[in-house]
Amino acid sequence: MNSEKKDLFFILLRLKSYLISLIDNADNCVNEFKYSEEFLDRCFPESKNEILNLLEENKIFGDCDIVFNDKIHLLFKKIAIQNQPSVNLETILHKFDINSQELINSPKEIEQYIIERENNLKVILELLFNIAKEWAAHREIESNVDNYSILNDEDVIRPDEEIRLDNLDVNATISFERISSLTEKYIDIMSDYYFKYGGNLSLEKFIKYVEQLKQNVNKKYSELLKKNGLDPGNKEL
Image 1 (cartoon, one colour):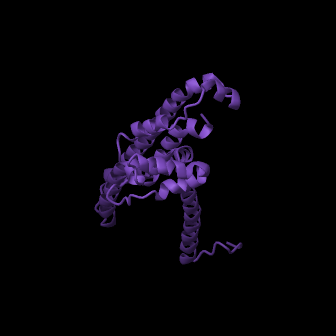
Image 2 (cartoon, helix red, strand yellow; image 1 turned 90 degrees about the vertical axis):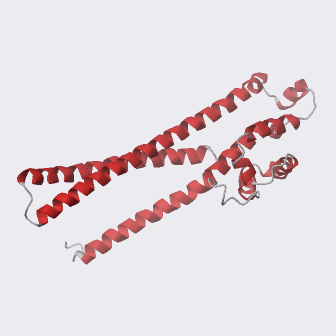
Image 3 (cartoon, one colour; image 1 turned 90 degrees about the horizontal axis):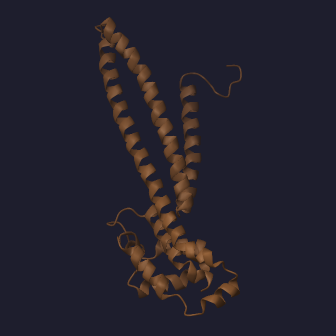
């Protein structure tokens, strides 16, 4: 069994992971091999046509059929098994100098790959949940700040309420720091997930967006300083 055939099941699993990173809505999914061809062209160009033909022979006609079929991994396994050539195993091992133990461990490696990916997804979802909780808490803080600020502006705020307002300002700062810390961790894990599990193109676009975001924020700060009579380019300031 040559390397392409031996790794067919693993390639199909990687293909599914790649598609999942790009497609999340069945209603807007156009069922063609748009992203599948993109992935195969980049990662396995020598096997692209063969794999697409195998998919169509097994009634898989597009990216949507792969992403939104809960039992697709079983069909992938069937495809991989059916397309193993009938040759002598000893001949293969000798020809390609393949360690037999490596072949025995292959299913375990695939299983470990899936487990690791699922665990990473759980971490991502947990981080998003925690970020949402922090934003909800921050919303409550800012709502209370607004209420006390109105009293302060009208000079009817009591001393104990003024202390609470000061404390709320501190809590708001701490809340922003927590949200930033969680978001940084989320972006780090998300980037690693994209890199490992097929979202390479999306990762490249995201990195370009972050670079542009930095430029936009710097521009806003510069415009704010100028608006308030401070020129960031004036060294005399």
